Image 1 (cartoon, rainbow over the protein chains, first blue to last red):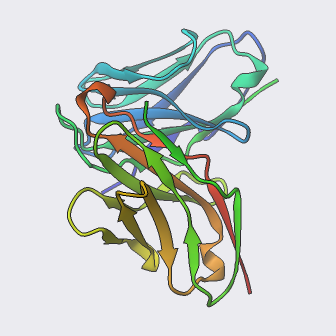
Image 2 (image 1 turned 90 degrees about the vertical axis):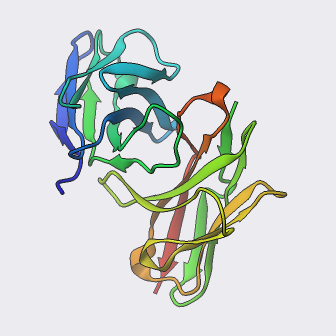
Image 3 (image 1 turned 60 degrees about the vertical axis):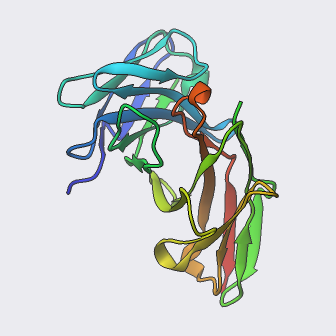
Length: 116
Length: 116
């Protein structure tokens, strides 16, 4: 099975612009989570989507949004970029069920976003 | 709220020696526990997990972890370290309690350096 893929791998934007990142989960996985990784804050949970619905949300401002399509592919969008948004954005997929499980998440390689 | 603590920013060990990377957690209910490893410029790779049953869990690349409920710990261990084990290690917890949802909470990471 192909792993989790993320596009683009690298992105350079300027303050005030917006950006859309894409994530394709492992085939058959219905849950997609997004994380922001920075040296100072570590891994911060952004949101999780399951069956096209946002199931969990972290403590990020409304500039950060996401969605999931019927084929489980997911996108996240950051509007009005700030310098502090520079980070590695990781997507993770999971088999996912409607209940709570001990399934592990599988991570993509990430998108490195640099905001100038 | 659930949380994970990795008290050591860095662990140094000589090749061939045993290694331990520490992790303690806090959840309101019973936990699902995970270890992930991250190599430079890569996403996180799943190593092992504790769901239920035997407190000693064996995972990939010769790693194992011991769940200790009384000490709320889930330390990662390996009997003989390799230089190639040098990477960033993350412990994560998911609370089974209904009120906490499915969010996976990560520790701040521990950098393992194995010297030849």
